[in-house]
Amino acid sequence: MERAVILGAARTPFGRFGGALAPLSAPELGGAAIREAVDRSGVEDGEIGHSVFGIVVQAGVGQIPSRQANRHAGLPFGLTTETLNQVCASGMRSVTLAETMIRAGDYEVVLAGGMESMSNCPYLLPKARWGARMGDFAAVDSMVHDGLLDAFERVNMVRFGTEGARRWGISREEQDRWALRSHRRAAAATDEGRLAEEIVGIKVPGGKGRAEFVERDEPIRRDTSLEKLAALPPLDEGGTVTAGNAPGVTDGAAALVVAGEGFARRRNLEPLGTIVAHAKVAEEPPNLPTVPGNAGLLALQKAGWRAEDLDLVEINEAFAVVAIHSARMLGVDEEIVNVNGGALALGHPIGASGARILMTLLYELRRRGGGRGLAAICSGGGQGDAVLVEV
Image: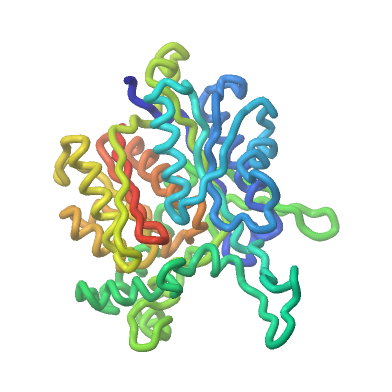
């Protein structure tokens, strides 16, 4: 069975909640990322065999959002597709599922990625169809209910970050320092053009027929400081997780073109990197901060690699505590983790983040002349995913 390579990758800038990208739907964002990723890959539209694209909050988006995104990218109706929801790991799982399809011989080229417009998540009226009969008639925020609320414990994911920090002795100051680090690194990566490599600018319609061109991540806070972060109240009473050391609610999309090594050789296309191994784990939902680390350890075991073999690591900053604890579990030097900042600065459009961290890893490894990398992410319900790549 041949290995899979990544031939092209691109993402939109990430926009703040209700910010610059709010006028665009998730499939429109997805279409922009897809079009650029395919163009960068050197693959012809008709050579793509299948598409897998992630999105978490689908209410109000319309039928089969992945197919909508393909059409916004100008891809043909003849391209088969499926929409995937694995909460925050959706974008990453789409890539590993594409790799599995290629290894199985089902397709030579598969388009993968994820998208989310959290600004456009609707409110739901669960009792409206048959009538409330008596009592209050409340609207439900689909963004929270379907994206941020644990389906088993019925608590916001913040609770698991708070409990994890308490369990593993990760202080408020450590979390705030990690958040500050994320913003500083993301700002530097933006200023030095490192993040621009992975971003495609996007036109956003405005009033009176005007359009704004957005090409930089909007959520980065250049003026933040330890003092400002320390002044923020905890999101849980008596806890240490705040709006500062948790990621922002954001909009964005990321896409990657995955292909077999044989196809790339025949077409004389240079890969961004090779997928070496991937792994999934599932635990009790409160173990949110441990699953990226455990998935990473399992992926290393499958590849026959050790933590010391890794040149760079990307761990999604679902909360600062997740990145801190998972890095310690893996036994890697924190200096090689999230070198261009993470979700605390860039934001966390939940369907897209898994694809984004993998893409950031690939581009940074290439910029450094190659090497080995790990991308890992947690997802709601207590699951974790990880991918090992070589550039």
